[in-house]
Length: 235
Image (tube, rainbow, N blue to C red):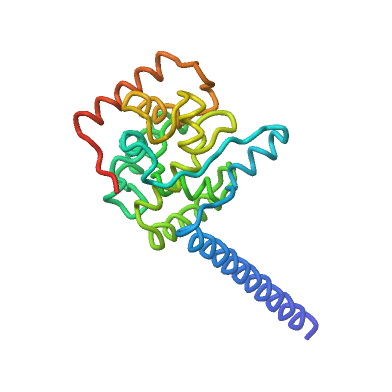
């Protein structure tokens, strides 16, 4: 009898624990979704990524100024889509073909050398998540990405991304990036400048104002050529 009561107590405790975890998970998703709904109309004052940068460097002075979609150069929109997510308008948050190609390449190399994050996935990370790499975080990223795609238009997703992406040490958003690197507004960026900014997005903190590398110049030239040859569909 004592053993049976003990097993019942253990089972009951396990059920309560699992139930509490499920409730906590659902509440977290409601929190994410409520913010996404709010940000579908209003600009975020900060992001999880900005907060993590300040936590790592408390004395860092963040530069960011929100600008509406219409005041961002069409060249930058096209350059970023070409460089980061060429199928942006065609997928629903995930580029499954690119994911399969990246997995195959990483398997061949025996380490992670390629990623396949879409603009929507990158926005999910910037808005809500830390830089930690884990399956749990990737799963949450996928859920948030799905929420973004179901709640926002592609135009709004791209507008948010261009306003919160990091373009140098503490420099966030297209307006701050354009002024920091080229001394112009986001609306005034030309094709070459836009291609260069798109080229540094994967590792923006390596490139302070006035500094470039042969690799980045080559990547920018490739992006510019693709912009001119293929164009890029943007919302």
